[in-house]
Image (cartoon, rainbow, N blue to C red; front, top):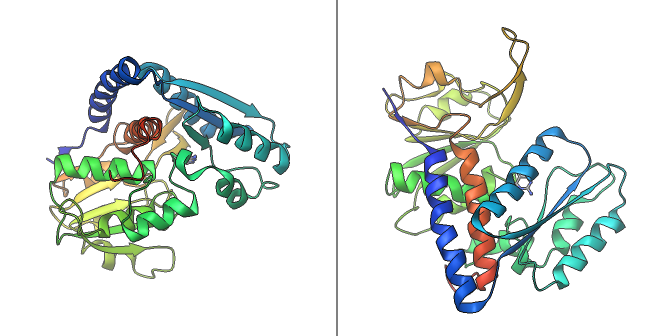
Length: 295
Ligand code: GUN
């Protein structure tokens, strides 16, 4: 039986640590971390994520505000909010929930966020810093995956990590994070995508397999080497044909992969809770001003 990687309990532990740190920060410097969240449109998944992020802020003692704008909001209006939050001293982190509606240029919006408040790590300055190995904000899901691997697997130095999916939110930043020449990372990294004609020939070489393509149940036993560590980043909402109800499934067919794996993340309760825990830590670091001078 594979070891179950319990992201939910690790995230709870990180939030508890953060609660104490937030109290100290208040007593010593009279600073309360503040996060502004922008949601545009009615994407149901995005609404759930933003609500969870705001609730998590409340739990650890942050100030947070949520601006929910209609789907037909103009680009200019979105930029107005960003500019306003860039100026506000009580807002240390700005998060624009993606995806944005089609009329809005995502890159232009991300570019306008003050890089020192870019707690998602999506601004080109932070992307560049990650690629170069300089201090900066690391995107939350990759940071959460690295934390789980640190705790459950140990050093990845010399291990072969195969990532399936090349998104700017997970695949690309995770590859850069794992490539860094640090004792924790220093992995051999392969990134696969839809261009692979024989995906299993790549994924079967993995010591650590990361499924981040957003395709329900795409990874089965045939993709996994015996004893591999499997990290499932997929959060897909499907209607269960048996019950007619919506439920969450990952990119990995858990039942058939688990017996082959040495360790595996469940969905839900694996990577998902870690994304929010890392967002909170990034916001805390933004509030303390410790982002650029070493991490
Ligand atoms: N949409 C899916 N994942 C994320 C994330 O980590 N941050 C933001 N802002 N939007 C997302």
